[in-house]
Image 1 (tube, rainbow, N blue to C red):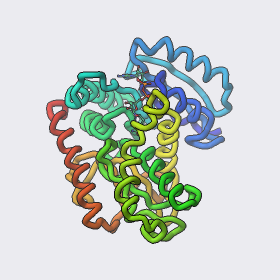
Image 2 (image 1 turned 45 degrees about the horizontal axis):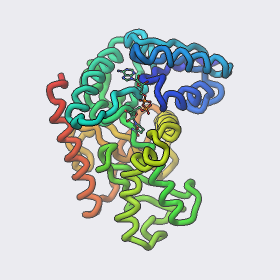
Image 3 (image 1 turned 90 degrees about the vertical axis):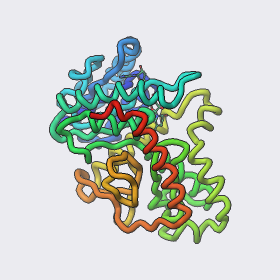
Image 4 (image 1 turned 120 degrees about the vertical axis):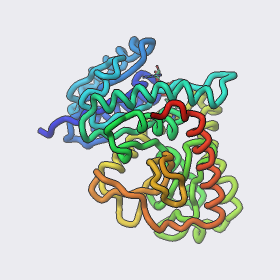
Amino acid sequence: MKDPITVSVTGAAGQIGYSLLFRIASGAMFGPDQPVNLRLIEIEPGMKALEGVVMELDDCAFPTLNEVVPTCDLNEGFRGTNWALLVGSVPRKAGMERKDLLGINGKIFVGQGKAIAGNAASDVRTLVVGNPCNTNCLIAMNAADGVPNDRFFAMTRLDENRAKSQLAKKAGVHQNAVSNLCIWGNHSATQYPDFTNAKIDGKAVTDVISDRAWLEGEFISTVQQRGAAIIQARGASSAASAANGVVDTVKSLTNPTPAGDWTSVAVCSNGEFGIDTGLIASMPIRTSDGKSWEVVEGVEIDAFSRDRIDASVQELKEEREAVQDLMS
Ligand code: NAX
């Protein structure tokens, strides 16, 4: 039997948690022969609901679930963790400015970054989902003294999956046919789903879908606004698809990337593609060993893409400025 992988999940009693925990525990994230320990972190008011979730995890009798620890103590929650999945955050309420939201959540992510640095396993990797996820990730990374920057990620995989599905529908093919789809920039309405480099069955999307106006217009806005459309239809924000995005992100970072392809995740920029150093920005990355990863070099950025990437990066710079006082 392999040694268990320890996974910490914040916001464990929330909507995404309710879908995500069962996927991790069932082996969907690390495989059917890999035991997992779950350390589930909530704030005090969420602990009662978390108790119920833990009862349901017990009732599944998953062969791959080794241990479950529910807690509202960050040190206990991140003890020995290999993967910290930071899902919980405070939602924007009526009348709240974006800056206020950044500040409120920022403080949470300072505490979580410090607790990860103080308690996690030496190989810890952190994926931030809670919004605004890029800037929350930036704050946690800056607070986590001693943990290398390349262990911090913010999720744009749900956006990638949404974009692939839209392109497949338009072309009348299965979504498996779509590759090389990069989401650039911020996980927000400024994100840029890059159709110029994407492929369908190995051919340029622009050669398969001749409707350029659709690609430049409806395609981009549908992906950017998909979260709002789900809220409109469901009366609640994306949860199962978001949890699936988390599973896909971790799988993509722990398994070799298929030849010639890449995946989207927001990482700490070293100045690649003219994106300011130190920002957590989504770009194309790949891994050959499922441990270290690299930004894909040589992806062409035409003038149309450049404008959109720059607009999203500008937003990230403004977010960073708004939380400057939280950065050590
Ligand atoms: P819910 O409101 O259902 O759940 C959030 C949970 O987090 C609650 O149970 C709450 O008690 C807990 N929580 C709040 N502060 C906490 C803290 N300091 N420590 C631990 N737990 C804390 O939200 P849910 O629908 O699960 O969404 C969670 C986050 O994911 C939100 O910020 C949401 O905006 C974000 N999303 C990010 C996506 C992405 O692609 N990056 C897509 C989906 C989602 O919108």
